[in-house]
Image (tube, rainbow, N blue to C red; front, side, top):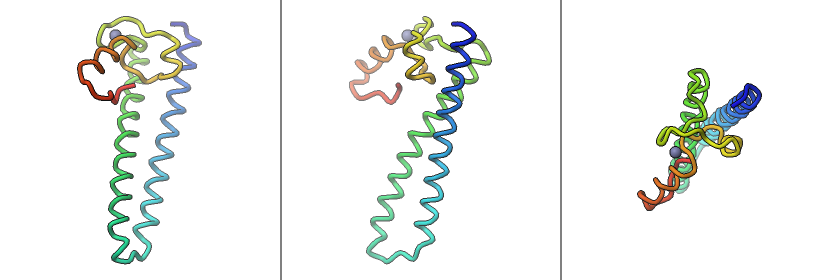
Length: 122
Ligand SMILES: [Zn+2]
């Protein structure tokens, strides 16, 4: 992988990270506004629903954030762009779309087959 590609991928990782952080911050302030409001008892259930929705969203974003951090660390260690499972170089087209991916397409397909449920990994 060339210097240019790496810089470009790093940029998009940093951009994604900022977007997620912004979103998480937005969620938090939404949640605060909601909690501060005087909520009637009937709305308590609705509030709980919303809370679990926020949790799910956060969970997904945090997972993604971890992958991004990991990818950035790998870039620093020059182990970036290599599948963690089969240790083959990842296709540049795949990295362009999913710069934080940890596995190649083949390995993801393998894992999905074994799990028989939708993989959370990109
Ligand atoms: Zn692989």
